[in-house]
Image (tube, rainbow, N blue to C red; front, side, top):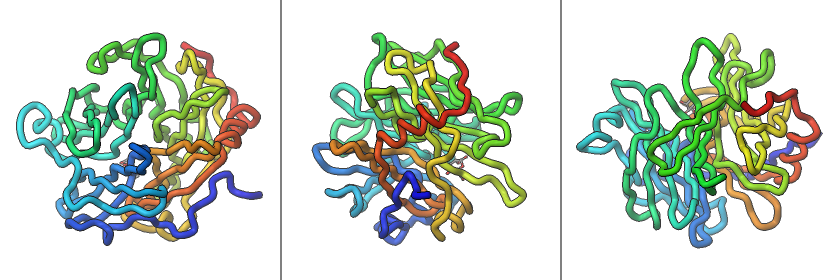
Length: 313
Ligand code: BMA
């Protein structure tokens, strides 16, 4: 059987050796095309074990050059400093209206919550608000308002119910609510331990395509894979389908071994005009990789090979 995601032959596309400042990893990058150029906002561990976000850019989606200075480091003063003390991680990028919204995990002694920032040009960045309480990670904002509201996929921590994907709404990007559960991990499936939003949702005729991550627990630790779900265009709380099979699992040496073994983790994918999507993922929390898939094949997997899904509500 052929793989639904074709790995780029020259993976990994970025390693710590490509970074002109001292870091130990390059992984979990948000991705977007800005003025025809590909931008990655990637996470790096520093030697103190805390993360910062760097920027890489390029013309073809495969070859990237890293800017000499980090793009975001923990805020030095004010409210954000209090909640970013332990680092900023796993940035997602959403092009919406006339700017780019960035959601990132802010770590501190008070837990992990989500920061929202905005950039117009990837030169300067303004922090807007801390948009969740602790403990939340993996928030992605949809690229347009739906029914007049901004929409995001959330991932609260919970030990009572397995870590699941929720949805929330906002009129002003600051205050979010009307939250409800959308996808739960499926028992004894590849994503049974936890799931979380991955790439910014992609609009297709059939629905919003959500490329997410799922974790299966093993005696040697969790295995992180990627899967796909399709959400109703007008009401994304309504699931159309969730592919029963994963679309990508760790297999290249830099995905199977590294800082955290057996991890493929996405924070960004870029749809192209020819119907393909470039999916970017971190390998073993150490390097950045890319692969391509036909968007229609991912949609078909959700439509034709879905597991049973919950209704909206
Ligand atoms: C998750 C997050 C991700 C990371 C993954 C695998 O909980 O910390 O940033 O890629 O674990 O270590």
